[in-house]
Image 1 (cartoon, rainbow, N blue to C red):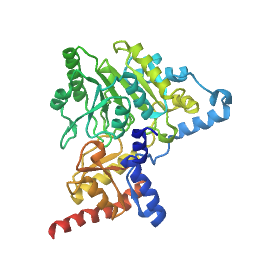
Image 2: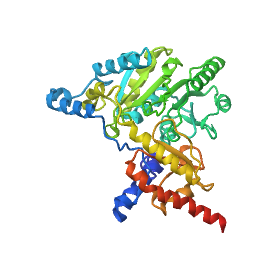
Image 3: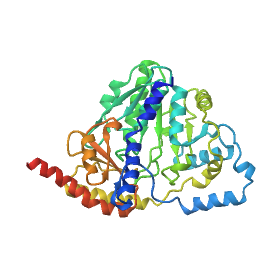
Image 4: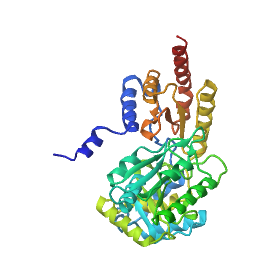
Length: 399
């Protein structure tokens, strides 16, 4: 017999992926431009030209045996040094390249980190709404998920509830800012409050609580806010990063884990990460893209497209009468469903060829997520469908 839990996960794909596959099938049936697929966070803006040119140059000039060969299990040393230097210069983070582990994207970073620090039945706190796979990753590593609900309508953490949820079994907290699915970014004062609570609870329980900062949207910020780099605020912190969103390389699966040098027993934590990577088979991330990383640092795709999409969609939906969370970053809108059941609302939206992800799988009911990292043309074409959807519900209410 196979592993039942794995069979269950494989036969029941994530809601996001399921909707994405439905969209592909529907486009074949009625035409690409007639389906408004807002299901998945797949960047539509191409990588920066400098990144593409650097990749071409590597392929044309680098030694093939090096370019396509194995690197060290933890990743290429020169690349790790480049990451450390960039973070130190950009965020005054005082990082150490010897505490950086290169990975096949953020999912690998998170799964490695959770397997490195968790013992059976230790608890990991997540702030709702959260990326659905957090639960999968935590439970597979033997942990227990604890959910803290947000304060509406700002969708910032409820710190009073957060403090109550922390127990002597709490081993880690996952922070995602800017957030998927709300787009909300925590301000520096929020980070300070969160970290002060963790410091207090560590002393109270005489324990170590890790703060895992999941940062694939770190550069996708649409205001003038400075990003509060987590290692500057909390010693027991671990950063999980991916280049998927910032430079539009989601399919290449490249990222890294950074252990804060100030962490207690930081080297032991890093060894545990190396061991977890080994046990999971996540060693030697794709070499070609390891060598590309130094050319990606500090670069982003054209974020003005996402900002234009955000402003266009937010303005139209609020004008039609939808309740929408105002996003600071990432490329998602979190929209209140027009009925109590978000899944039923998502199904109703399909009548108008709108593919919207219900928020239940994000640990919070009553909303849908719209991924606006699509061509602006799709945003414009979809607006009549959004208008028809809300009119459909208004007509139902009048009967």
